[in-house]
Length: 246
Image 1 (cartoon, one colour):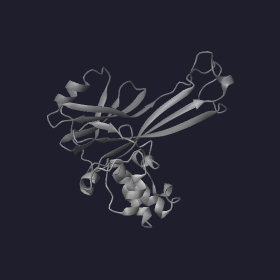
Image 2 (tube, rainbow, N blue to C red):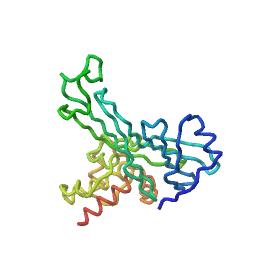
Image 3 (cartoon, rainbow, N blue to C red):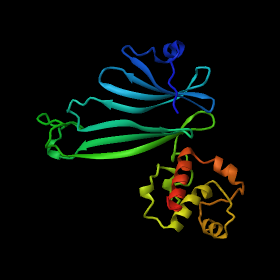
Image 4 (cartoon, rainbow, N blue to C red):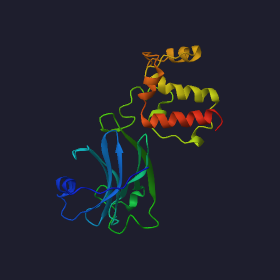
């Protein structure tokens, strides 16, 4: 549940007074782990719509900020268009999903001599201009100190793991139906193996013991589970649901 609330005058004056034309409104507010999390909407120049995620301490000190949405007008002269959109904020475990979309013109004869620009007689918006769209997602959360972290960037060994994507992207059930029950079990437990869990099941202990990246360190499943990111916890739950026929 998100709780709307006012932006104090002191905070607005200290952190947002540098904008000469700036409309500031609080979209959502959520207390998380002894920090106050604000999702703010700004219109700075009438051309771009932006949403920023600002993390404050209860005392009003800004800790972190990231831009989670940006939609700007396009005059047609550029050969590409970038757009950022906030997809969702999951609570209470707190997971931010941001979609980045880039659209590029692929018709070489319609490009101008200047790199990244359209030829004078063409516009990016023309119907007969071929374009390619690329979409990617970024995932953010808070660490125990209230700092924003981008998942996967700080996840060790995820690239070496067979199912490293479990630590890097939010999974949906329809992505998992093609895997066998055995593969789903290995996929789910690989997250715990990456944190150094020493398995009780002989088959899992033998399987992960052969992996170069695996370093068994603890039999305390509770502490290992607590070290998972909010993205990993959600994915583990999704995998388990599919694994059990959900």
